[in-house]
Image (cartoon, rainbow, N blue to C red; front, top):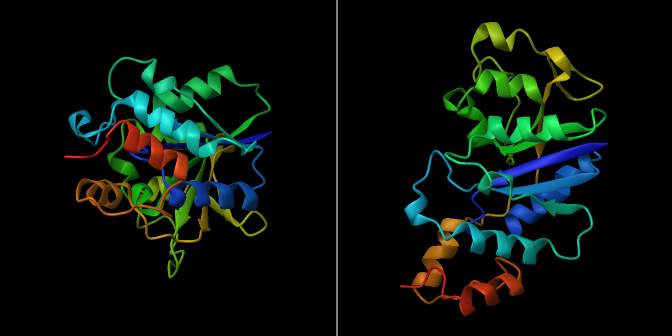
Length: 215
């Protein structure tokens, strides 16, 4: 079994999130993609976010009907900041040992991985799927990771990815780039513009009913 862990604020979730999750599941033959909304993201102020409950409800609405997708509220059940290392440890400790975990993230986030909490331990805990945009050229890990750590990963042509110690790995995969962002959606809602076709209709209805992101 191979599970993808897709974390984010999802404020709100939109078609860009859903499409890349579907594509990555297909190219790496994942059995499940678990969306994990952050309760208290360390790089953002929680005061600017919609409540965790609303973000979780919108996520549930968005993935309804797709048996490949599921969700977890694990980060709301912990106190303190929502560090990825704690989330991966939770799944690593609670899952069947035969389940392989793939942590899904964007290229921009991976480029800043050395600023993350306990990032070296995180790289050793699971496999990483890094979503790349059109025009991205794989230049290796030397420009992202310290040299000593970059050298511990070996490129595998068969897997089209980098294999590391303890069964971990890093896979760069190009996905369809939909130029949609949650911040733009929030700004458009605030200014009274239509966000139709940027996110699922049932999510739009939830936003409207609860007056999320409005002035």
